[in-house]
Length: 494
Ligand code: UD1
Ligand code: CA
Image (cartoon, rainbow, N blue to C red):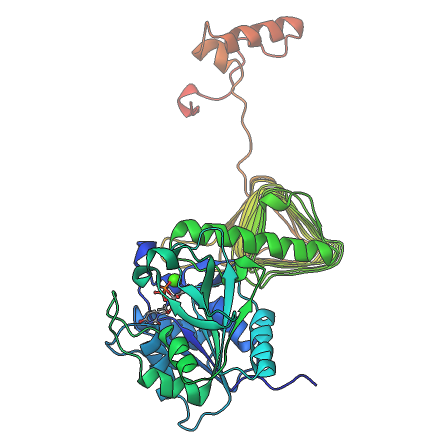
């Protein structure tokens, strides 16, 4: 049994994030297919707190709706007009049960690589040392912008000073405040009531709590982490991409260690919620997004982008763009396929080159090999769709459905004008425009008989290379007498 989690985690997400220069709140920007706030909430949930509170203000409605979607049990707390991390924390305490006791962890919504393990390490170190406050610190080569950790003569933590309030000497300190803390709940509440806004930014700083607690003779500790990525915040889009790349590097490495072959990790992007089976092989330039799940022995890529796609064991998907699609076991997709939402390809089926599918159920063993659009259709088992066919699903106003049975062989260059049904075992001729249902076992053809206007090119296109080629061919084998036109010229279409 694991030890019980903290009384609460408070995630601070009310700040503005002006340096993103974005219409959407900073904490709703994503890396690895999850928002910054989503990462913070997942890490917080990972320590199993009794309460999880998220403090919001900037972009309030958007952020609150996102919290409700990713973690419906989280308490959404509105920060009032008083600014600062201290005020944000105080608002959260006010929203939590009045007599809350035990440990409260405070984290920032813009620190996406922080793991639940690190938070748990903080919590356990805090409890074990009997401290009133423990802060995660890191030693950075460039500490600019961060709050600096002030150490007393004996090495204990004496307080934190913000960049903007620090003296020249204090700015030389390389140990910084990560903004991640463990507090005794009662001590935190009392200390926050004593924090003012007398600083350069006129904000109520959470960091001031540390000095106050220490002056009460209580123990304040630092919990130094070595993995600096875990404490790095996102303030602008340069950091967003830097942390996104590092997150991806970690995800891809994790999958390789779990039995996935990745030919080129640098150009392989895998979102946090993707699952991959054993002996999957991923070729270069492949992105797997959303809640995609990839079965054992699947071969993916190169040049493939999949979002919310589920693939059965042993399938091969090459140079494909797909979303919200299901690919059966042993199926073949690509190269150059476009799978739109609602595509379901059965086991050992095929969607081939320059084929687009949408809302299309293609049964086991059925093949759509070349140059075809399949939209709003159901195709049975073991059917072959001829090259260059179109499922004509749109009459300009409505979209309607086409059903093709099992074991059908449809000819090349067919138009299936929906709504229409082709029965089991039916065939269609090349170039058929299927406007009426085809009974099982029938051959449907509706192409007009072909007419050859003999000698037409030599008469109507005299002097062209085509006419010369035709003349040469008739000398070799005089199949085409000059005067053998059998159709009145007025009927010839040019
Ligand atoms: C804060 C710390 C600093 C630390 C740094 C680490 C304070 C006073 N300073 O500075 O010591 O080195 O984080 O990244 O705490 N927020 C609110 N309400 C507010 C203001 C901020 O919820 O009124 C939230 C923000 O959304 C963000 C977090 O608190 O998630 C930190 O705020 P930010 O403005 O980034 O603080 P820093 O100035 O970076
Ligand atoms: Ca920050």
